[in-house]
Image (tube, rainbow, N blue to C red; front, side, top):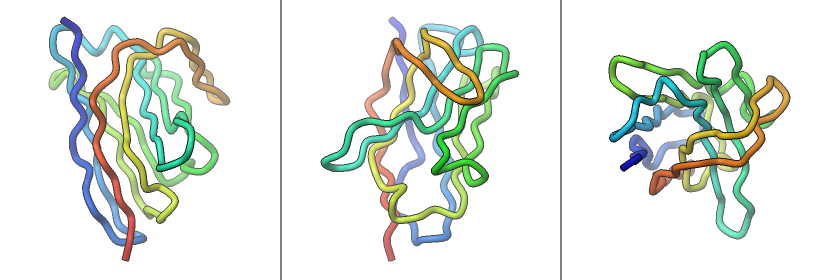
Length: 125
């Protein structure tokens, strides 16, 4: 059974940092393109960052470019999202998922496959 588990969320002050982890079980994460998504209360889910299966192509939403970094550790079967210079508007539930669609530097397009349960990120003073 393919399963993704997110962790690393929490409460942080504006300007702070968090590193989210997306750990896979039941399959080898290195074979898949993976995306990080977030959903704020009352808003639609948005793509935050995606990485191709080869790790060659990465996508970042304009709102996070230069502040967030996506990476993969194949030995740990985990994809990370390093989030720096956090802002209150980064608050939301963060999810990871396999990307079945297409990733370019300008877009991360579904469909999307297996989803994790999400981890809450709250940026507040």
